Length: 246
Image 1: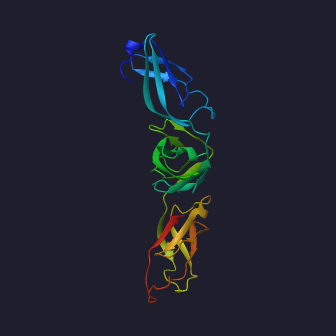
Image 2: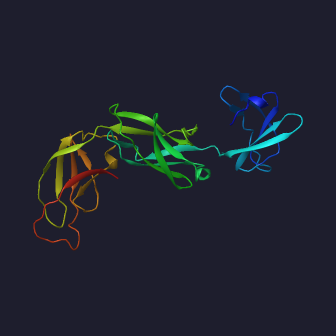
């Protein structure tokens, strides 16, 4: 707020939710900050999103000042993170599912990977999407929560975690050829392929073909080639082989 020093001896209160019920306020004169404790939301007499009115009464005149909107939100919680794993390089598209997200439409949202915040978007009333940030602390499992407002003024309770794993790479595939009808079992060798708790989220992609599941075989992965797509030349061709999180 502006200079509040002249009003130090005045009665100052806040009005929340469009209500006429005054809430006592205190002033930090040095920093020109007014503190109000939001009252409990009353569905019958208050609006969930409404401007905060600051009332100043010096005994002679009453001044009303309007601030930004204050939002009353239903208690919300993050119940599921999908996929719950990704590499330390970040970039994994993560969907956070939860309860009572519908009131957050239009608010600034963030995914909190530990203490690291990244921008998030609400997809529907119970799903928020973001991308995992790069992680420099090595493989680790961390709690993912949702932050609301500038500087994450409010952080939702979360019962879900995201596990950062070493980034995998492919060094060899055998065999390097197979029939166009698919069905060739391909053994993939590389680095950091041992994801025992996350292999169900790993898939192989041969060129632009559909994703196929990956299975663990010792320290390697096993994928079965899909049929060559209709309309693709049946002559001998080579394709890049990629690992991906679904």
